[in-house]
Image 1 (cartoon, helix red, strand yellow):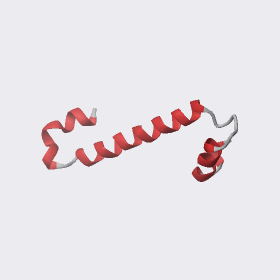
Image 2: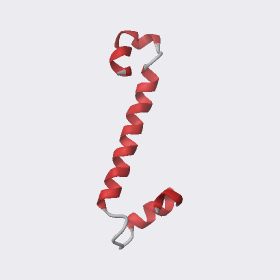
Image 3: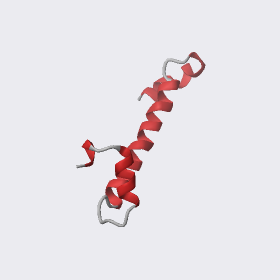
Length: 60
């Protein structure tokens, strides 16, 4: 349902006095965003000579 709507709509609905979206989907969205930020920070490390000694650990 929310995959086809804007983030603005999702946030407005999450803030509204409605049963959906509930805490489960909001928690999942927050977790997905946190994972994306972790991936973004890792992408700045991998391939950067400054962090060559930890690259294998970060790359997994």
